[in-house]
Length: 134
Image (cartoon, rainbow, N blue to C red):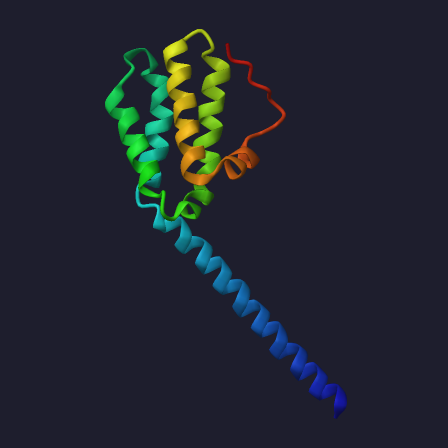
């Protein structure tokens, strides 16, 4: 009889843990949806390299506006930080001959650091690559 109680308690505990895990997964998906402009932001950043010679200020301004929108709740950007930082830092490494383009990419990294915080942004950057910019 005692083992039945233990097995039942264990099963109930496992069910509670599964419910918590399901809630956490649901919450994680909900957090992703809080950044309404996530797909637009990603496509704008990726399009920077394709049209880097045009130095499109409206595109840059739109990215900055989206990032600054989350200044009061910057943690909402966390699920998207890697998708923002990685392409920007790759652009800096790949297009080192275009000073204006690199300046714009680093300006976006600065804005992101200002909004989300230097430590959080720095943790997302891959330390295997070192960027030397002069």
